[in-house]
Image 1 (cartoon, rainbow, N blue to C red):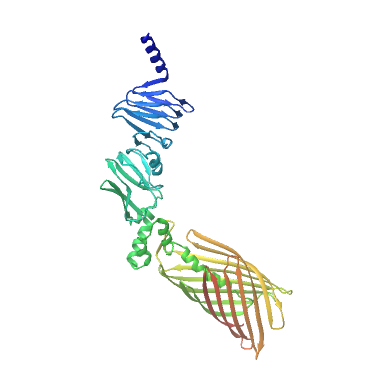
Image 2 (image 1 turned 90 degrees about the vertical axis):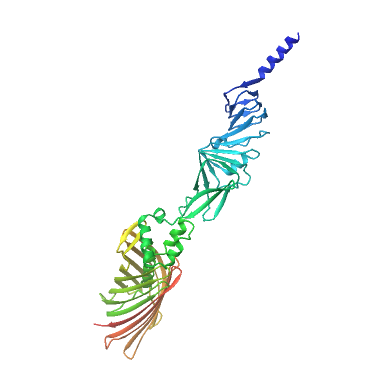
Length: 499
């Protein structure tokens, strides 16, 4: 009778127990597994569902656990047995409450964050990393247990842009080869690692091989310029910038690497031309002029031929030559400029007037070579042009004084080799003048102010006098333009001859 009862108990237990030896236990998705699991030899449990079993591990056996599901099990270890949680891809990064000692094995080609590993390995004896990618950029590493590296281990860091020694990980052993990559892909630093007392440190080295960072043509030009002007703060500051954006911003302040340095200067010249556009004039004139801005000054001379085509239509054609001397902390160059302009004025019998101007300059720079967007340009030449048209209404308040509000627009073009830049703006303004005759001389005082849609403002004051008997006269023009957040000035002295 006793033997029969023992047989019944044994059969009952076998129904609810399963033993495994040298095979994998796979729990499928949507499967709820509750049978007791006896591990007789080292094996692997792959849980993709819900595991509620008690798990018994034989002495000196290794149980590997891969988990993408839920584990509610209790684990019972024989003497010398070990549990190893295996993370072979990001889906296995799940915290398991083993209720006993365990080890974490990271064997993943996917980047696994240190924050995730810190959570999974809290309570673990150690973390073994083999041929894996560990992302250190999103968490602290102080809470990690001891680590062992084997094979090729890649560490991802972010925002470490210095030459200081930076502690990456505590308590690291093993014979793995460690590679460090920057999540921000900052080419300004090369990085190596070294061990000190079991801790892993990062050593950053500032990269000064600009061939790799900027390309060979740009790097060669930098070396040439360093020889010509070693004290230029552009080169003094290059080795201290922390990333490529800072480097590009620094280089953009030099005409050698950014055409906008020249284009901005030409924009100021055009703005002052727009501000001082002439009304109806007659005769032949010679006009020396000068411009003063924050970074340059310009001096030149113009000649104009003007006259009435009809009683309502006036044309003014001019040629100019000028020299720009540009100098600031990062630039020192000269620009010889040749230009032409055509101004047309039409006055109707009803006070309506139309004013139009077309102006162009060719620029010849005193530098031999520039590199723009990686392209080498030898003996750079530039061209700029502006078109203006205004429509207004002139109100004569009395025989001498008038006021003339207007609206209009401008369109500008800047070119250097295959680089071009355009700008179109609407503007509005008002002119006023006082005209009178005294002792055979006709005087004309004119003030005009205008503002465009982008906030630039121009003001022009003209004082003109003409002796019709002697057929000679002169103008003084004083202009100011607020362009690109700076005030710029132009003065013109014109001598006119009637014919």
